[in-house]
Image (cartoon, helix red, strand yellow):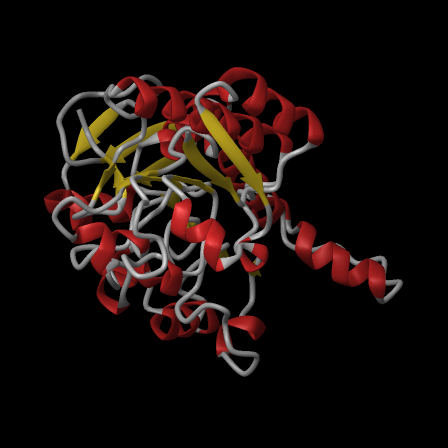
Length: 324
């Protein structure tokens, strides 16, 4: 029997679905990562959900063959020696689970900043009837998307519904649906001055670290809005705080920061038109992503048992889904 350890929080009905579908060939354990015993870990062939990094090693999990993550990004897990070792466990992620919820987060933040809702919320708390400067709209603006995978693709669809021009930067020249233009990273400095919104969902890599820095921030319109939901390392936090405080940027929404969590004394907390959330744009517990993650896990158990190609296989160089 193939031993499957599910550390993803699942309902009783979902537990029954796993057992009903694969109970003849698999035995299942369902528990939180911290509740997994050494005996459970030693026998596990398939891991569904999160696990402490120090347990992902031959000593603790010698039989591990497949690790299905609940996250889309796997850059940290892809660096683990056990995953990188010859014959080590296969790593799969949850790309495709978060596009809807995270793109809606990005649209919501754009609307908040354009209509000054965050300022009016402060006025309301102070019982102040006070108008701010005239609001702006998404309609007719130009959005530059850094990354057009599942998240960027869903965002492009929503921006087009608001009659926005959508320009994308991606590695290949194929033009995704709802995108007007595609460019490579070599064109970034030329495109930044054109953009009203710079929307980022890039993975963490040496080529993306501090891509948004003092130089690239200076190229943006003083009214531009920067939204980052990918990895905090994309943005030079100090340079961003300086641009906001000097009025050289219209606003920013950050669901990820560098460092993360953002220290309580970091200047970004007090910057004007800065919206910060604690990495909550897409959570595996939300209904929409959760159902998709369970679906990926179900499918990949079947692929494992039948010796088939896995869904959402991770590229260990990028930490994201293998591109086809």
